[in-house]
Image 1 (cartoon, rainbow over the protein chains, first blue to last red):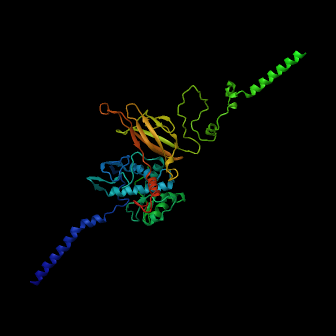
Image 2: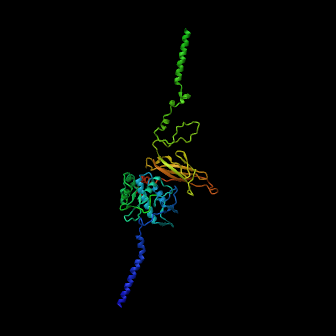
Image 3: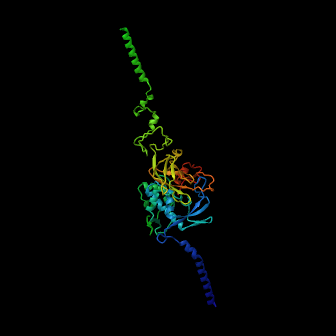
Length: 219
Length: 222
């Protein structure tokens, strides 16, 4: 009699435990999903949401989305860099910026969003990165292609979002280092002090490392 | 004898008067005075003459003919102390995005004209870097600005303002031109595109005039 009851109790408990595990399993898997350099392919395109412009013709970060444009990934990075960094800055600062712009775009390509019925990776404003079609410049193009095969990632090669902000001119911008964000003016400051692009990235993004992207060349 | 003396005195007086009158004669009225050695020009004009060491592109040794109509208004922004950058303009069809050959691009600040080739490209242009005087003593502008106009038969004129220029740097820019569609385009007017200031400078500008008692969005921070 007691034996049967015990069996029933055990079977109920087992069902409960397995049921709970099964119900939570997909969520756990989704949370644990990471993208690594090497196992994740280098993007060929990126979806850019184009927001409506304000009265002076500048894309409005709070404007409504007009359409989503699919842009070649290299071209997107080339058309962002001169609008985020300054084209006549030190080449080392531009190369550090090129890697940050690319890693930011790559991360968001892997984590698309849906807003107002549009699914996209980034928009063309400072909500993500300032993008203007056909605005690439020779100096920034050179910096992009010099670092195209490089990624700045976690030690396990996980692709992370590399954030940056303007910062202050002629200043190392230590407060940005503490926040794990690269200061753009800081990158120019350190480049003028003779730092290499890698040293600049390592200064602002602590605990990250440089790696090559398999199968990706410099052109 | 007495008459002889009188004649001599008269002759000497005439000679002296002649010499004196010649010395007071305004020589700039003489046609012979147009030789460069005798030109006495106002000081201001002489100061505007470019020095031989100045960077004055496209200068020619050809003596200007006053009968010819001058090609420019005489305003020359290429004065000493100003920098130059290299500019190349690409003109494309705004709808097909294909290059437009034979479009004429005018750099307003220099009043010089350039034709595009089969790839829609102008030759490399040595263009001045002109920063607005409005902000000169407040926040240094990070780049100069130029204005371009592109003309092409069958297309709307395209005005491109605020092309960013920096000293010694190479700059590329693209002008979109839109084909005129008969029947659809009832008013033929130019299309304008204004390139904004770089965001890094706009951040500096906003921070420069921010009051601690009215922070707004606050100073730039991580």
